Image (cartoon, rainbow, N blue to C red; front, side, top):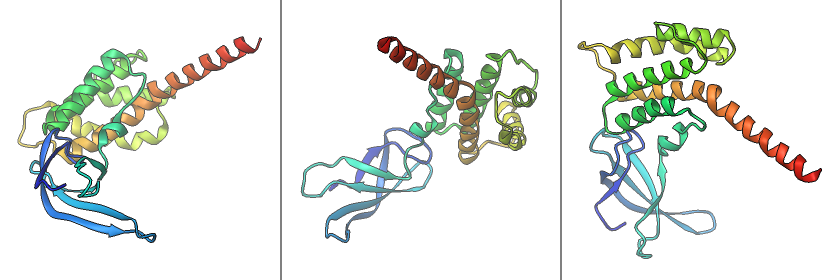
Length: 207
């Protein structure tokens, strides 16, 4: 990593292809067996947060970073088996959050939850009421209930013009809160359905 700057995705704000600037040049740290590991401290010019990179040997000619701290949120936010209309809003939320528009992300997360509830024939005029109904019917775990107030506040700020803005930290937290019920509603049932199908195929082969 001889270059002073690298183009990577920021794991904090999600900005893609970001020119990360070197804060502290590469440092060699050896483990108990004497094996070297090489680290560099970089900074994101968008959100100002620091990122620790573990990279290849400076003498190897391979400048690809292969470990980033913190890790990217993209994989953690991925939800399997989302219906197309739900994934459209969810993917848009991820996209605008990565490029630094948290207000827009909050609006897309609201639409994501509304679309998700509609798949369970719940179409309340107020989003929080829809989520309350999802919980009451057992589609979403009761432990999600304390999050409702946070969703209500972010929903209102993101959807209406005012001096108050949704910052990146708040939108990222809302993304996490949205991801969990989506897994309850779609990923877990989808995985169980695939598992049941696989077991049925195995029984068919054994017969």
